[in-house]
Image: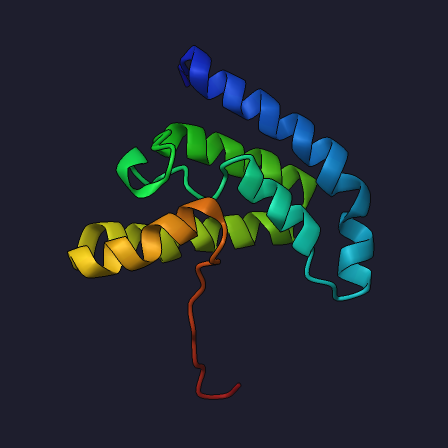
Length: 128
């Protein structure tokens, strides 16, 4: 896959973050059934929760290639953090971008892109 300089720089920075700030703690977080709030806040500061959101809504609009590369690096550090990042961006932000009203975009996209609000989804299963 051919990547441009910006995409590679993002990937390199996220790799360093994941190896230094996620990987050393991932096993402990899992063992303790702990939500890694501090790591999520650091991920927000890096802009990882607004990668698919246009700048006008507070995101960085880095595109899907940089997003996929960053997500891969986060997953190498901690699978739970990559799931949080993936759901937040792909299930939380993108549907609002594509199908939300202007009012919904104004209300939700900036806090989502900054990480002040986390995107999630609710799922029911008949046997759960």
